[in-house]
Amino acid sequence: MLPRPPPPPPAPNSDSLPSFHFTVSRANLNRLHHRFRYLDRNNKGFLSRMDLHNIKELELNPLADRIINSFFPDGAQCVDFRGFVWVLAHFRPSEEEDLTVGDPHKPEPLNSRNNKLRFAFQLYDLDCDGKISKKEMLQILRLMVGVKVTDEQLEVIAARTVQEADEDGDGALSFAEFAKSIEKLNIEQSMSIRILK
Image (tube, rainbow, N blue to C red):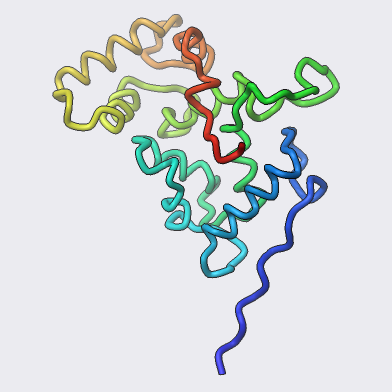
């Protein structure tokens, strides 16, 4: 006789989530839990990298592997529901009202412009040294454009991008330089995944 699989994790409530700040409605939390259980096909109570590759919204994203890696900090091999919600909270559309924005007694929401920029910066900072080098910019550009542009053209684009935004002349982009270089980009829209709706 085969052993029975463990029961699925109970439906979450906002009290069972980590202490970081974000607001997710009960309906969205239940949707996320349903999505988590759908991805956790073997009822393990956690997700692996392979499980996350089944997220349809990531299929066409050239940075899908980098985004999936963000679910697994410090070399972790699996992510539980809390970690799953934490990463996806960065992608919550920012037009959703958050009553704590501007409240100095509350931490900044994970889906704020600043936190979305920090998340994007970490996707580009491949060696996690707090800077985006020309080499890292080139690697990300290769992922994003594929074979549509020659290596020589990509090298010129990467060098120019870093050169134009590098205010301190160190040959790499700090977070502040990165944020300033894309200040006109609608990061709130481009870093939103509608599975949280």
